[in-house]
Amino acid sequence: MNIGGFQKNSLIDFPQTLACVVFTSGCNFNCPYCHNPDLAAGPVKGTGSNSGGEPGVPGPGQIDPEEIFSFLKKRKAFLEGVVITGGEPTLQPGLPAFLERVRELGYRVKLDTNGTRPAILARLFENRLVDYTAMDIKTGPDSYPRIAKGKSEKDNVLDRIEKSIRLIMEKSPGYEFRTTCVRPFVTEKIMEKIAGMIRGAEKYVLQNCSRDVHVLTPEFLKDDRHFFSPEEIRALGDLVSGAVTSLEIR
Ligand code: SF4
Image (cartoon, rainbow, N blue to C red; front, top):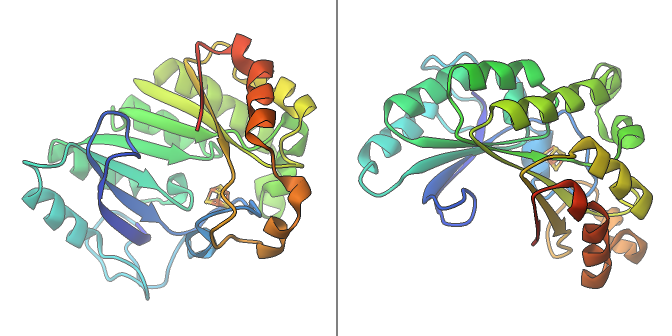
């Protein structure tokens, strides 16, 4: 696992669960508003890092997974869960082995994902390694290739996203889909298409994009036209609320 960050406590990342947060390095998307640009740009396979779930030597700037396991062993009385976020965690070959060890220690697991690796999700659900999945729906069906990095990630990206949506709805014990509202990735027309993609889902979250942070493409934040007002986000919510059981605006 290439782990680029670790937060010891969080009350807001895992519903009803006091959790720590593990940040993996590397992402196959290029969202200009990404709030974790260093993690997104980080290595998927770092030289000398532990990519197979076995003890290894972390690469520069990486956290040794053994440090996290040692923390988890000590905090069992206080913490209930572990959130795995990124970057994109499902790019890590060591993810299933890492989660097996987290499970052996008795923790609940929440996984954040962009949904580009349905085969990994299927394996994690099959082995009951995830309790709650939060998948970002970045945009509508036609626009996904715009944010995928490189040709191999652009190919069939929509198929993979749709497969992940179905898998999560069928197999994840708890889940939410969520969208960060920024133009041109989200518009009224796109929101109607997203409603079709996630129709029947239990929970959908719309969130505004914070402007006071370091992002992958800083120029992107300088253009007011990319942002929605709270009223406009509520209007986007009206377009999708009939398709899902519960809609939340954060
Ligand atoms: S998918 Fe997430 S981590 Fe990757 S670039 Fe987009 S916002 Fe950043």
